[in-house]
Image (cartoon, rainbow, N blue to C red; front, side):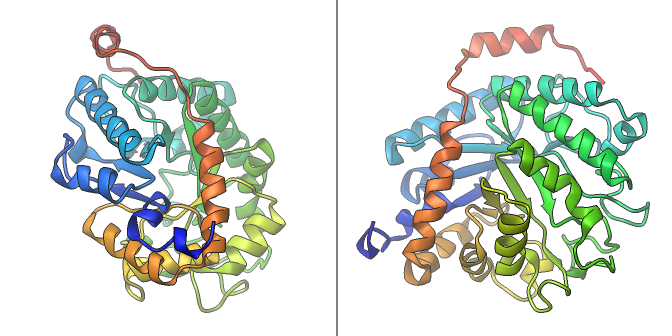
Length: 348
């Protein structure tokens, strides 16, 4: 691969995971998948009406992607449980991580994750942006309900149980939010916050991620968190120190690095989505997440085509190819989806 292979926005689309407008393959979605050739799509409530409709949407997205780019899409969702689960009944309802952490039963967490993954796979979702591995110190942390709790060992044990369950159920899990938002008091959706821990090694916060990396979790999501002891100027998402020296070097993580949404307040206050995407890719991220304004995806790909180094494209592209090879090849029919959810009842 030389520079001539990385000159157009569609050459760089594979490094983007984007939100789409609605529950069908409309003109905007077709442009993102068919023309820009994005690498992934993330689903939200606006995309979800019923299990059969989601199956039809993901099937049409995959057909468009294969026709345009010759590779399958990564189709993701945030199905953590508690306050963050996009799919409602008749899908399995997952208790908040905080509640599961209080019970502390690894077998329960693993079984729930396996069941969740099986249901996601039925409707064509192949990536779950979970589990949350943040070690939330207390109720003043915005991640409190979404975290297994304040004990790093408990978070590590239950987080790795969830990872095993998702993999067994046929969906790729994503451990988040590196390097841990558990010591924060400000929601990164709103503003950038510095880490409060006085430990420069972040031993408590990194333990769950260290265990997940050792287990072979296929992907890790970054946090828009400023760790002054590592990099006083740049949040982790765009910091070569955080992603290179710590995640790749110290933790030995070899999988795909996915950014959190580049439109969040913590990053958008200082960088546009295209600028943040370029900075994140140069720092070591492989997949750039743009959840809401899908028009920014084209701008981001255009900036990457003009300024991003081809060496990083080769490296990130190889990791994404490896991730796609891990996607389940099992396909079910619309009738099988209809029958499964006809029999399903709300589960907790």
